[in-house]
Length: 121
Image 1 (cartoon, helix red, strand yellow):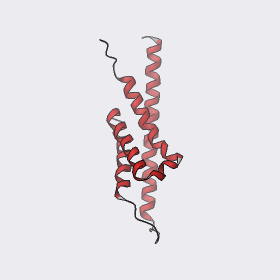
Image 2 (cartoon, one colour; image 1 turned 90 degrees about the vertical axis):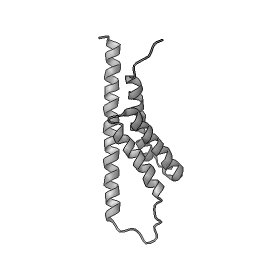
Image 3 (cartoon, rainbow, N blue to C red; image 1 turned 30 degrees about the vertical axis):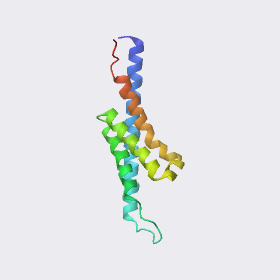
Image 4 (cartoon, helix red, strand yellow; image 1 turned 180 degrees about the vertical axis):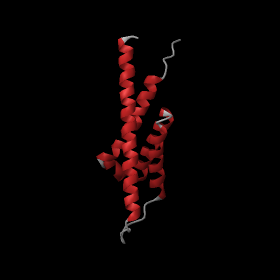
């Protein structure tokens, strides 16, 4: 095996596991916060959260989970959810931590592209 080819495969493998670990952390942390919010009593002056926020968030996290098996499909669903959250709630994109949700999806896309066989004509 060519050393450069081995290096590319090794790098892709490391990036894939980085994406998987980050996506798992994002999913688990979101679930912990969601459960914590559900167990506390709502503030009397709090506005209800629009259903679209939940839908886009579910797409974002569901895409990260799907990307473990289907990298392209899961990453695209996750990025669509991320963009949807930004459209419905532009203030969310002002928080730097929000961008951590897009990083695993971008890494999954990169790994999918690197594993895709090159087609020569």
